[in-house]
Image (cartoon, rainbow, N blue to C red):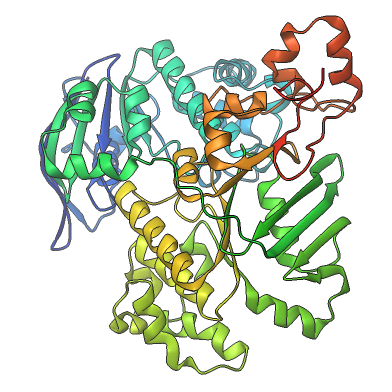
Length: 559
């Protein structure tokens, strides 16, 4: 269906793709993998005819026998959306925020088919149903911001297959999504492919995604082909050193259990944050000890981000208590809050959004020092600690790679010698090798500085490697908490077991007024006799002590 021969793409004098050749048959899935800068996205944009005017292209791209490199813009516009379609990484940017989701899908249909508006609207609803969005008639009238990340990605897939394209390109479709959403998005892509019979070009840096979904694999590095073959050949018996390095970067084992620290640096008790109609955080309790890494996991909408923002606000919570280094945040004066802020810092998921593009790296790292009356002379030392040359202080963030920008964000976070670092998905958007480097850096800093980490991630192998203890969140509550090796090898809560199996996510589980909020999805509840089930309906389970599962029926809990 798509035949690429000797494709080269350059931006000015910089080559992005060099002599790339591959083909994808109808109904086949080809995984295109490699690090940032390997040429994956440039290849996708070249196929779609979406490269900027500054790019130059040589070679051949044939779609069902038709040459695309010499096609005019009018012809390419006619082919996009009908004969070939693309699913981008960020669906929030791909959708227009001021129009309803159903209307945007219907617009894509009417751009290529002569059908009445009502027919296109009905087809949009059918497509939302096809990709697994519940109550599609109602959801078609929603705006993109009213969808979760996983729902937006499914809606984008619905739009991409609206005209039954011959070629479907998915460019990093699961990046920054949690493991359950990733699994469902891949299932949706396969369903959409079966529905249309399309060839699927799956672009990703996540080898687990390729292993689950692809038939063949094409490994790129610096725009050049490194290795190609079936999934079995490449992932189980790689021939090239670079491929072996990529696979090694994805592997993670259990982190040895650390000695139990005795000092509590962060304590959260019965924390509540309700919004109109949403119990974002609903009675969360945990503590973080000195020198410890506590991993916080859970799917989209579980309340992780709201919990972090409540902690970082250092203010009186809606209900409950937050204590940082022995100081109750509800009792802090403005001056006290400023002092505590030095000991509690955060590293965000996307350094491109958290670093001011107008400031140099040196100014970014020096800013917290100057704010708190300290000398900026430590900037070169801080850059060295995160593995960056002192000369980078004169650069701006736009001139750095994603991994380098995240190193800058870490340098800024440790500038004031904090006791606690909150890490909000700090490596989710990075390639496997860069991710491994940043994780190694974080582990070294923790050991050298005695830092405590509250580490939020959807990457379960990463949490298994880096965390001493793990807390699993579901719908604003902690479903299970305990030592990492225990949670991963002998999970007590059905939700934790489902998360480890990467079960399909349903964004629209009905709200539960009483009892266990997980029961609509719980396999144990479905199999229980009537008497034990009644307890699940009437009584919400709690965790006793600092380790356990909030389930009435897990081993060790009285029936």
